Image (cartoon, rainbow, N blue to C red; front, top):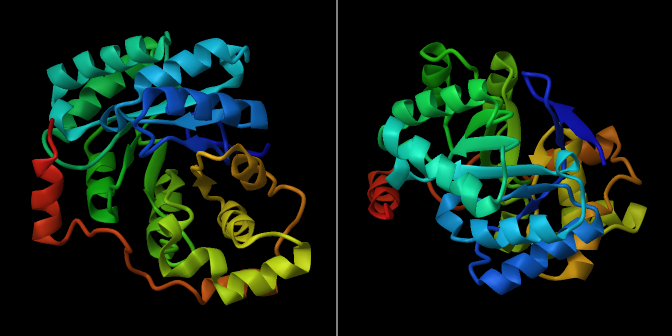
Length: 281
């Protein structure tokens, strides 16, 4: 496994396992155990996913020393604000059966996320959070948060895949020392990613699948990726991306796939904001 070093010196695996949309508790626990057995050490969950308890059970059962695991969760909009956020973070730690989190993110930039971040800064200083950051923060809100808080976010997890490569946002994150992390590295299969001819042509050179090429491309750009699958054989395939390297020509070719727009949602769309803020629960 390769690692990135965050702005506070914490080492983070560049490839992990995400549990978004695995709501069934037994299935989620089984998937996390399978992922850890396959070699994953970064596990990414969130309060809104409803599966922190299942992740916690898997961590407890896996037999891997705690210090070798990197566990991330995220504070949901309904828990925004200093007091609610702090309480919810303690609840997440309890559900995950952990004394500390390796990384905690603000899930969406809505509600009193400044209050949330103050609570996170406190818990970070107390040692209950090894690193803190954000998710789905566009450059304008990210810079705003950086300028008016003491701790610079270590990570910004944003939609990043071959069709939305976040080149400009990535450069801004680099400027401020924020690590980019991808959610949806396979674009959830949109734009026929798994059969895309450009990715296939590159993959054929290395006997690798479209999915492996898509992950390798992001990794070589310094992007942390958290692919999700409920099938162990695909988990194994997804982590098998460290034995080949794309050439500059490969990278330049894949760069042409970038549409420079989201395949999912935009915070600049009022209807999207209305929808996301209606999910508060």
